[in-house]
Amino acid sequence: MTIREVQTILDARLLTGEDSLDKEVLSACGSDMMSDVLAFVKDQAVLLTGLCNAQVIRTAQMMDILCVVFVRGKNPTEEIIQMAAESGITVLGTDHRMFSACGMLWEGGLNGGAGYDKFH
Amino acid sequence: MTNSTELLYVISGEDFASAGEASTSFKNELKKLNVSPEVIRRASIAMYEGEINMVIHAYGGTARVTVDDKDIKIVLADNGPGIEDVEKAMQAGYSTATDGIRDLGFGAGMGLPNMKKYSDEMTIETHEGEGTTVTMIVHREPEVS
Ligand SMILES: Nc1ncnc2c1ncn2[C@@H]1O[C@H](COP(=O)(O)OP(=O)(O)O)[C@@H](O)[C@H]1O
Ligand SMILES: [Mg+2]
Image (cartoon, rainbow over the protein chains, first blue to last red):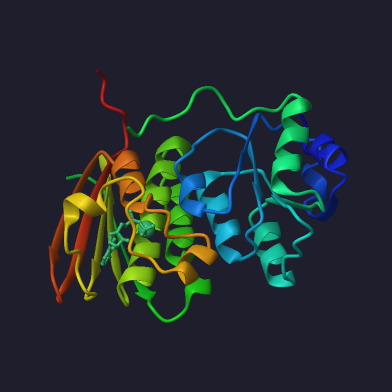
């Protein structure tokens, strides 16, 4: 799935990263807890989150995440958008809630990446 | 004689918004040193979790990084309260973080487990009331097994 398709499926606003809309994404991860995101390493991933601070973008930078989607109508500040732009991360905003947004992408063919980590 | 690069970061404990700046710049340095992308990602995540811990659980601290041909070594030192029970702290999900910290997206108790998972070697030295030093080593080449 391309980032452009993610945008269409989620009826999302493009906040930065026009040039990257045709990049291919292979998996997605949805969470408001950044350490849960950091526990998951997948290539060419999308991060969906309801958290709206600079740490979301830093987390995406550390993990080479291609696209961040802010759910539930959250609007990141100009500073956060700028930070993402500088590291080539596409930022989308959707009014859908987390559960729905994840479900819509899953239905569209994106998944969580193969397998999961067993902690216990 | 092997090539070796030293990096030093001072991490402020004052301001959560800037937490992670050291890790961002560390990651850029590793790129310049031609470390492989997968190793950079692992080392950066480990460093980032450690940096966040120093900000939310201690009062900031320092990160000393040494990169040579074989390893990336990260030494995170703080003068914070120390870790009372390291074994407990290492458990996935164990956290003493406040709700305020959780609202900022951290405090899920996955930081130390993530650091252990992404580094090849990790040691914690801690003294109550004095501080904590976490040392992590990430090999530049995966070991053949
Ligand atoms: N540098 C540190 N100084 C003091 N306590 C720490 C430090 N790092 C971790 N801890 C303790 O270990 C616990 C577990 O850490 P971690 O796994 O990173 O989870 P979290 O940061 O989400 O609470 C923390 O809640 C805290 O009590
Ligand atoms: Mg932590």
